[in-house]
Length: 355
Image 1 (tube, rainbow, N blue to C red):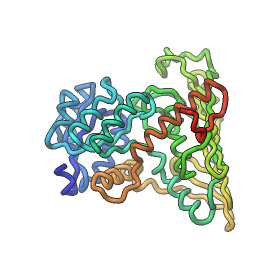
Image 2: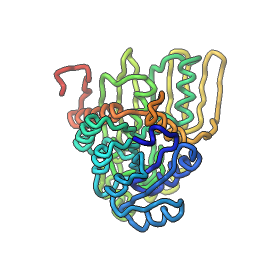
Image 3: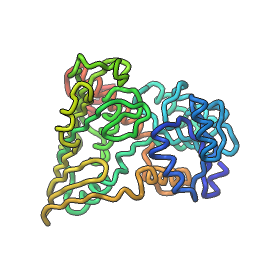
Image 4: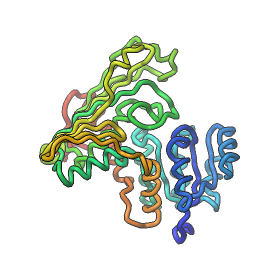
């Protein structure tokens, strides 16, 4: 790829919306010495035309047109579009690196097929597993390596208060209309894998519909009454355990009671202490020196860090970017969680008889 000999990558963006507005548009603007947005596409043509006029780039009428443009070096897939994973196939044919913020575990067969194409074409691919780059995550990793020691137990609770297809990814909204087990469940499972530095060796999932009479159709929060509570139990090597619960609360059902609830949080117990995390920027911990409380700066932003790692990966430099193997492992582990939930049992991933 011609851009591999230069510094600045020319970006083609597929799928606009709040993820683009809140995370990637400002990040790419700040990293203008390394990126330039060359073209945009969205299934709502007017949205793409307006965005192109605002930032001074091209708006394409089709995804193939965008991928095959000679002035586009890398492809950003930021919002689910009507054509599913077709853009990945096109990018592989064009041998253009892919940054993927789509809910990767939502369609396992499509991901497996795309992975085969990615591997054959040797196309760089980075899934957006953003929680790895939250300020509290990076600070926790520092503390684990210095004063806290290895993690032994993670207890976490995540709450969502609605649904917004173009919502800012994080602990309070979803980025795509998928079950909680996938978003944010899959991303939280990946976060646990990142904290424990390894894949789980056993998994158990549980889910259910708590508020069965909620007016989902009136609220337009969901297309159907999916489970509004999910949890998973993961066992890691050397006995590490993670127990994560995720719940979606309907504001019209609970009203002001929502304000009574404490913020979502994650407790991490380690060999030499413990930490309490409020995503994305507050961490409290206790070690041999006593109690500590930090509100971490949000500069550089999560978007800048993600794009910096992608740039390094494309350039062939040392990068902490998540990989295709991370995406595949996560998707397969979510499938195991779904099976565990259906069979009401813990599944041992070290059992070679399990396909």
